[in-house]
Length: 474
Ligand SMILES: [Zn+2]
Image 1 (spheres, rainbow, N blue to C red):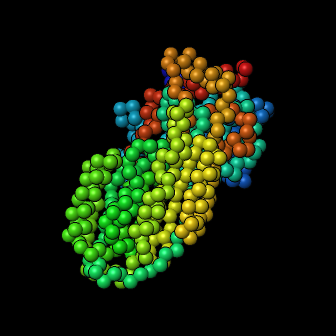
Image 2 (cartoon, rainbow, N blue to C red; image 1 turned 90 degrees about the vertical axis):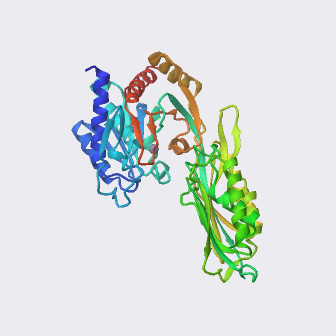
Image 3 (cartoon, rainbow, N blue to C red; image 1 turned 45 degrees about the horizontal axis):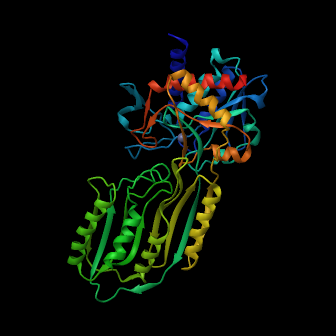
């Protein structure tokens, strides 16, 4: 077995160790204990900050000149079995044709970001890299709002360069990412007695859209269930008494529904068929996409006054991709209408804005708040995090791309992504720190079909080690 094969083996072993320890977001104690034990066993310096993040260093090294390998401790808990308790259970995994996945694809694998942690531990304890001043940073709760990175002790970021190991496509180097914020708006509404002519009570549900990540998938024309439903309401002139749709700020809503009343039920059914056809022609929807209309025993006693106008107003808020950066070949700014919940008292809407430029994101969030204010809506903006406006200098990037070419005789892709990475928050605390994000290939993260392509692990680790050596020589 050569050195590289041996390293891959060791990453695999560290990863297996991590899988045994429950570590969904907010439950990182077990991992911290494991990191502490590993540090003791290998004579590394262990530090923990107030937020629960961990940094490991070589003893007697100059901490400020180390190259940091950074990953996050928590994983997204998703299972096909609703009773699977991620806070107490281990992740069982299997290897099938060079792919690592959870056993029978029943849970998330946690390669995001367990494999980053495993590679960091492998490097920190690798005999062949003993003379390299490396350090490893492990953050908590990346998946639930980047709070570990947000509250990291500034001294943890004292280092010469940082490799974020949380990217998922081997062969790509990420040098920047979008920042984001959430706006939550409450619109007070009036209750109106259901018009006498609206004799049919209805429940309409729009479901099985593709959905996806509000950052990486926003440009894929998958359709937003809330917007589609609002369009349906404004065109069908149905009365609405309750409405709800979407469930996660970071997901494009896959379903939305409302209850209400209509004058002519049969006419609504005919309209629905035509409307569905139009949706199928306009968006990329799966074959089981549907809008179903159910007749209720009786119409609701009250409906939201003038919901048709509110629907038109909501449709006019800029949504989806708002700006594209041609030069960087990426989505620059976007808004995702993520969650709506309303009844005859109030309507609440959560939207998530992202942009690769902080100033554009701030402008968009205030533009949205300003529009809602005109109709009496009150908006709170929170969960703000900074974009990573590339700190990767041309020289540093050239070193990385040259190294890639030298090792694999191929060009790597350099990318700015529309999803969030912890690097944006690190940049706020240490603006001069050169950073780069890369990782082995992981498909379908955050879902039970998450899988790691094992063949990419060797090249990923080799690149990491060789690039670190080159940076230190500079
Ligand atoms: Zn991750």
